[in-house]
Image (cartoon, rainbow, N blue to C red; front, side, top):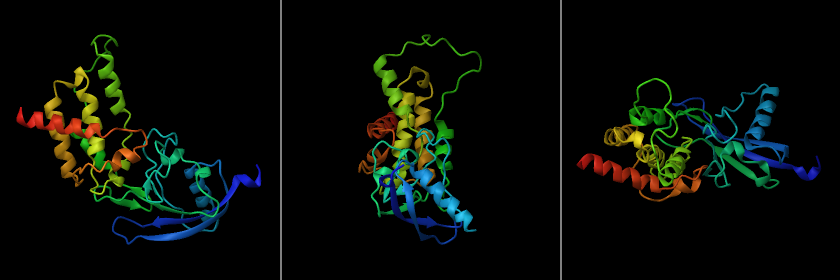
Length: 252
């Protein structure tokens, strides 16, 4: 490893003891950060140093570290998941930052995502939206043959485009209204494209949209900030689809 692979970074990290506690930024400096590290590995290094100094480590959420679970919900320099498009925070590498740069790290900011501690937020609101209707009711038993129900390629491709949503919440964090419309729209659109989702189609969209509103998420104003920060590239056509489905369900 050459010296050119090492950079110095200044970190401004949000610290908060709990949901009701007053939060604040705390400053740290790491002198030798390997540019090949992921962003979360850099935070691991910082936490190791804090623990060695008998200080409390920074709480942050993570799981797979492969960009598929949606746990790494960090706002980095004001952008959910950081500066690289189509990249989750766990897949962001330190080579995208400059030597001597100051990096501000915050949690998701939304009433429906209360802060648990430091950078960890409670995203159970998404689970409750899914529980309201983001599923298909079927009888248990053996799985049917893959070709038992013919599905056109355009429909299957469209359903898969929406199904890749990892439920990270970046769309909520980026939206000026803290709207969950992209997440909910993706889940509604995915099932509305498949024949298996047809029997519960109207019930599903009404239940999920109503639950989204109950959770305290704001309305969509078509800023499209959600699409810009989505790490898997969900299109805002999902929101248009959800609105169409909702109107049809209510009027029909």
